[in-house]
Each structure stands twice: as C-alpha cells, then as structure tokens.
Image (cartoon, rainbow, N blue to C red; front, top):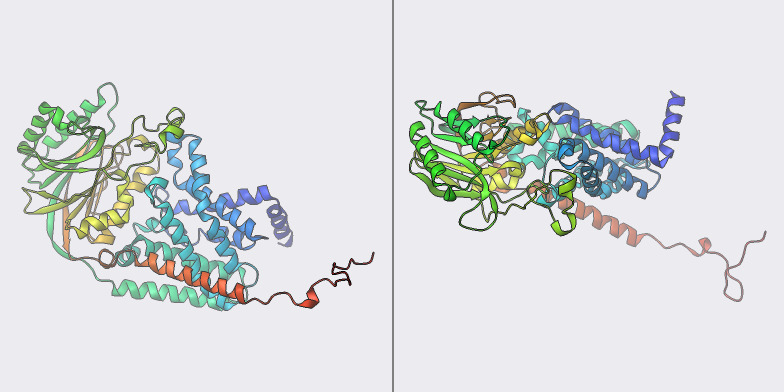
Length: 528
C-alpha cells in the first residue's frame, strides 16, 4: 500500500502526468448524464478531482488542475459534437475550462493543507457556491449555453425534481457539490471528519425537509396533444420529402379528437408567405385532423431579410399570425461568432454557412380550437435555459412546447440528453412539457417532471398521441427565481471580504526578521 501511494506521489509530481490525471478526473461527472444515466454517480464524481486540487503544491498548480479538469468535463459532456466541430471542439473545451480556474483556487484555499473544523464547514457552502458561478457564466448563450449543468443529471430522480421546483436546477447542482465536498473532507482530512459527517447529515436532513415541505401543483385537467416524428429522410429534395412524411403521419390522427399537433424543428423548409401552395396544404391538413398544427419553419422570411427558425401555428384557415422566432441561437451550429475572424470554421466542421437571425421576444400562443389552451414554444437548445421556460409560465403558458431536431447526432448521447431536459423544465415550472423532434427522441413530461406515455426513440417514424396533464399555480421557483444563485454570490462576497480583512490585519514582518544594516545603511552580508 505504501509503495502504491509513493508511486502516485511521484506520478503527480510530473506536471504532464498530473495534468492528464486532472483532465481524466474532470470527465467523470459526464457519466451521470444520459446515455449512461448513472445519476447516483454525480454525488461522488467530483471527489477525485477535488482530492487532486487540494493536494496541489501551490495555488497556481491548483488553478491549473481546475482548468484542465473543467476542459475534460466540457469535452466529455459535449463529445457528441466532434463530428460537427472536429478538432475545434478541443479548443472550445480548453477555452471553457478556464472558468474553473478560480474554482480550483477556492478548493485549495478551503481544503488544502490541514484546515480546521471552521474552514472545512465553510467549504460545504462555498465550494458549491463557486461551482454555481461557473455554471452561471457558462450558461451565457455565446459560450454555448447551459448544457450539462450538474443538476440536470437528476432528471429522473423524483426527490431531486421536487427540489427543482423550489430553486431550479441550481438548487440540485448545489446539493450535489455539497455532498461531494463533504465526502472529500471525510476522506482526506482527519481533524474535521466530524464536521463532514455532520455536514452530510445536515445536508440530507435539509434536502428531506425541503422535499417534505415543497408544495405540489394542482391538477386542472388534460390536453390531447399529438407528436409527429417523421424520422430520418435522406436524398435530394429531403426537405420536401420530410413535409410529405409529416403530412402522411398527421393524416393518421384524423378522428382521434386531438387538441394540437406538434411537428419538430425545421419540419418545414420554406416560408409559408412565399409558398401559398404549401400554406393551403397545411390548412387542409388541419381541417382533416380537426386540430391546429404547430410547425417549425427554417427558411428566409418573405417579409424581412434573413433566415429565421420560427414556430408557426396553422389552423383550418391557414396561419393565424401567431409566430415565434427563435431567440437564442447555437454558436457555430446556427451562426458563427465573429465570422470575419472565425469563418474558417465552416471548412473545418459543419458550422453554419449563413447566420440565422434572432427573434425579438418570447410568445405565448392561444390554440383556438382547444378550449383556451395556451402554449409556449421553445426551439432546440432553448430548452436548456431555465429562465426561458420560467418567463413563459409567468406570461401565462399552460403547456411548454419544445421543437427540436438532433438529426445530426442520431447515434450519440445527444438525443436522450436533450429530451431529459424537458423533465427538469416541467418540474421547475409546474407545467407539462412536450418535446417533439424530427428524428427522436421525442417525449412528454407532466407538471411534476414525471414521464407521460413512452418515448419515441431515434429509430421510429410515427405519430403518437399523449393525454397531457395540466396544472395551475406557480411553483416557488417561478415565483422567486434564481435565489440560490443570489445566495451563492452573497456567500462568496462575504468570504472574499473576510479574506481581504484578514490579509489587511496581518502584521508586517518585525525588525528581527529584517536583515541587519551597516552604519552606511546597506544590508549586512552574511559571512562566508
């Protein structure tokens, strides 16, 4: 055992080997997300990374370990982007990994060396707060958005979803990092182990009390909503073939008394204003089925310049003017940031040849033939942003609708990861969420985040009907917003202030520690 420990110490003494270990440790949390879905692993996955950081010989090395671990995590949780971005994804991972530099410093400051009970106890609140700051910054859409937030790994855990209704995904992330921190203290620090055990017990007790207290949504009925998933359509004219397949599947819904039919992202490749024939076909389809269609148009608009991705409600008389233009676009997938400098990315991977345009605001749509049903559309990775679904519910949305594609990533973790976000958004807002895709996975979740019916996997080309439960009221998260984020900022600000005061009050070196001076005022040189 002693030889094994010594061998590890020698390996970690090498900057290159230590860097490789840090990057590998950072990849571990990705296993908690779909497709592996080892949700329980999230509560221990950060421990190896944190143990490595606390053993760093200097703050600079701890920051470096934080950076490489963060890059490893970003690469692992987004690895399915490699076919599209190729080597460019490595540069993006290293760039985003820089966000974990201060987190590495924080972990070493609180857990490095032989901290006392007070410092270890403070770490239980401050280390998770630091992690949330990283998640908050990288949630900015121009940095790729909040894909892979640690709390999102708990999408199928009922107690965690109930906590999400209190504080959103942020509260779940905070809980996960707190447990990891307590386990790190328990393993590595002999003095404050009682504090670690007490912290774990307190964490479990607090989570249990919050779960028991958390209110539940009030059920108010149901809506009958159909999802149309045409599947993969290849070849020349595939856009038109996709519309034809969507029409074919939608006609099968006639006579089933559905309230709404939802098509996936980019299900229509031509603007309806410039294609009156297509507009008439969709209106006739709505009449045949007896329900409005929510389609998604990915094309240059006839009434303004540029390409938009738009959710359009089509009734028996055609589009009724209710339209939502996608606001948050995927970097490189739908536009190239600083195209004049980074336009070469289009030749390296599958970056957008032409930038999409952004919509101006979110839209809540009234479905005329569905007894006052109000829907809030989101397009593609907009479902990863908790503030967007929260805003729609505050504006009166009854059902959240996600229109997605993921057809580029058929045989990867992406379709299941994307669909799982709908469970979290539903639990946060007390509103059911319908996730309709072109090629799978499509899914529906109720107002508690519970699955409704079965998923439509990526090998299915079908239409499916779901009786979607509706709910009233506002969840605590919808009412109070990101209070967990604000509390974390306050905790870190208080810690930073205390550290500054401590440094200011630290006594200056006394005369005994200064070198003796000669009669001429110069420092005396030691005798050889």
